[in-house]
Structures are given as structure tokens and as C-alpha cells.
Figure 1 (cartoon, rainbow, N blue to C red):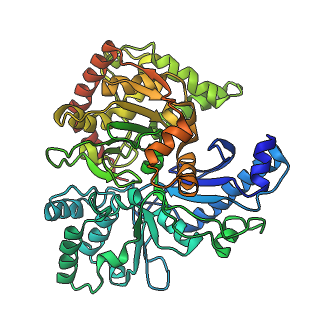
Figure 2 (figure 1 turned 120 degrees about the horizontal axis):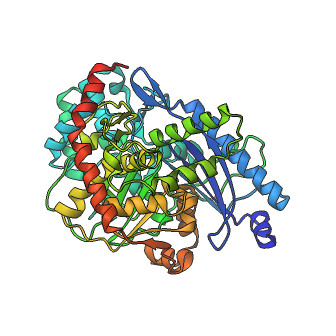
Length: 532
């Protein structure tokens, strides 16, 4: 505690803040990259006029509340204020559409990764580029706005992601890390920059529609891990800490998306390593040692924070429906006058799932709060379905909801691991699904038919990951690669607790997936029949 206090007083602590889908989290780390304080703010996206969005006012209110919570933690633990920082980094959920004019005015509501409203643009750009452009990507949102004839498009001067926006406001620099950039526009892994040939194709397309801007001039500058991306400005310091205690001037690392910070937080930036992040959404990232045989609609090609090629399978839906069911049980218990500890409730229900039939006893659920591109649905209708002879028990019910949380991901992973035969030496799980020890890990091992590790530190998540990227920028030795820095100075060979797949679980999950695929017409009927 004494060393941590000195680190804070001497301005050597490093701050990482990540704006996740349901929580904004801040982590302060010491000179050994160990977390010494944290703060958080809970928030939620909203469905407004058919668009999943967050108001920018909520971004700043959330950031300030998160920082104040962190500052309180520091005060309570160490009896000091945060006045100076060694470095800082900002991260956020990837993708989406934030467009601004020349004066910095927001031109359209923030369109998040959760939207599935750009199918036409996605298909046309994928054909034009010969490269899969997911619906979530910024360039798909821009082109869909062009196809829609939205009048604001002609005035766009800057297009960025949420992490890029926060970084811009904190530093004045219009830049993003290469991993975040790879969720905006395709990256050429040879140049570690936007693909020049595809930039030219898009500019030709835009000019034919009468737009005078060049897309490369709209996009933020691409930076690699280890580079400095500006300093915390006086205005940025005041926006983060209205109390005035925090001083400006500390270096800021390139902002990164949650995919990149997840790779860092799980030590998964080396070739043939991968990680699965399971929270509101779910995604798997595997660093490739060789290119895929062909493009797949279900597979996104992004990069590590260093620019190496990564195959990504991203599902829009993971734990939202599962959490909703757990809260129903909370409400039930409270109706009987019971005081409910949520950690205990989650743990009890998750472990109950392990008592269920391996194939869930004939039960079926779709956890689609929003559309799910992996399975071809533009909207979501959460469903739970059973036949009269299904084995409807609490254990099977919970197991079904856990399977459903990873089912769409498995559809994409089967392509990557079975069809493409991608080699992976280590998979690490992190996120809320893995908080109850051994349960989410066991389900993921069955879904992938692979050994899965979970680290104790993975619970710190992307906020710790972006803090580590800021640490790397500040403390790396000359020519020290990020993977070496993480291995030698952060993880020290720790690969977490491993769990091998149970062959009976694998067979059970495969049986569930067969039922899941066969039931797609049920989900389609619900979307067509129940209008929002």
C-alpha cells in the first residue's frame, strides 16, 4: 500500500478507461502494471427511432462519474488525491458511426455496433472491395447513409469511433490505434494503414455520387501500439476531473477498441493465440499465422494493436437475455421477502446449469435482443421454446440460456476452426460470462472443442488492457515488441487456469446447435409477427 501511495503521489500511476456496452470502467496501475485502484459507472444504450445509440452527454457524465468513483477509491485506500498521471489511455466498444462537421458539431446520433441497419451497404462494399465489410463497421454506416440520401453526409468532416472521439476531446488529436481503425475501414497489414486500393475505390464511388470529400481525410490517423498519440490537454483534464485536481500534460497512448484491449488483457497478441470476450456482445479473436483461404461473411478481418492480422467472429448478443432471466429469479426471491446477493444468485444458477442434460433436454432459446448478423437476422426477439416432451427443469433451463449465449459465436467459430482449419495454441476467456468460476469456461470449451484458460486478472478487462498499452508506450525498451513486454513484464508466463473440453459436453453442444439451426424459422416468424 505504501508503494502504491508513493506511485500516485509521484505521478507515476497509469490510468486506463474503457467505455463498455454496459459499464464504463477505470483502472489505475502501478509501475509493475498491477491494478491499485478502480472506479466504474453503469450505463445502457437506448433504442431510439430504430437505432441503438448513446447520447454524447451520457458519455461525459459517465466518464466523470467513473473517474470520481476511482478518485474516491484512491482517497479511501491511500488518503491522497490523483494530481498527476504517468500516462493515460482510452478505449471503447468498437465500430459504429460518429460523424462531425468542420466545426466539430455532431451530425447524426451515434450508431453503435449493435445496429444491423446497413445490410445493403455491407453487401455492396464487400463486393466492391472483394473483402468482407461487416454491418457494424464505420465505413458501412457511412455508405448506408449515402445510399439513404441522408443530407448530413455532404457535411461530414471527421468520422470516428467512440474511443477515437473521447481521445480527440481529451487531446485534440484525431487518431486511433490500428486495431480500432481496423473496425472502421480495411487495414493493409503490410503498411499498417488503411488499404490504399480500397480507399481509391471508395473515393471513386463517392465522387460518382457527387461528394467532394476524400474518405481518407475523414478517417482518423492510424497509430501503432507504443507510439504516443498526444498529451492530456487542460480542457481534457477538466472534462475528466471537474474538481480541478488532475493536471494536464501526461502522454496518451493510441485509443483502442475493446477487441484490442481484450487481446492485451489476456496476453493474446502472439500468432496462434486467441481470446473470447463474453459480455453484452461476444467475440472471438485469433491471431493468424497465414491468410484465410477465402472471405467469409461470418468472419471479420481486423488487427492486433500492432497491426497483425486477426480473424474475428463477433456476435451482437451474449448475456443480455441470460441476465434478464437471472433478474426474474431475483424478483421472485424478493417477492418472498428474501434479500438477494446477486453474485451468489448468478453463481447458484450458473452451477445449477452443470447438472442439466448435455443437450439441454430438448429446450431451445434465442437470446436476440438485437439483430444477429451471424445467423442472418436484422432484428431480435428473445425467445424460449420447448416441446411438450422436453425435459423442462431448472438445470436444463439455465444450461439452455448459457448455450444460447455462445450459440451464434459457435456458428462462426465452426467456419474458422473446422472449414479454415485455423491453428490456435491457446484460447483465453474473459468477461462477465466467466465470473462464476468454471461454468462459462466449461461451456466455451464445449462450444469450441478446445482447451480454454481463464486468468484471475482477466476480470479487470479492457480498462486494464488499455492501461497496459499506455504502460508499454511509456516504459518499453528500444525495439521491444508488445508480445515480449506483456510476456516478460506483465504476465511472467502465467497462462491462467486451463480447462479441457468434456467430450460429452461437445456432443451435447453440437446436438443443441443442430436444434438451434433448425429453429431459425421460429425466430423469423417472431420478427415478422411481433413488430417493435
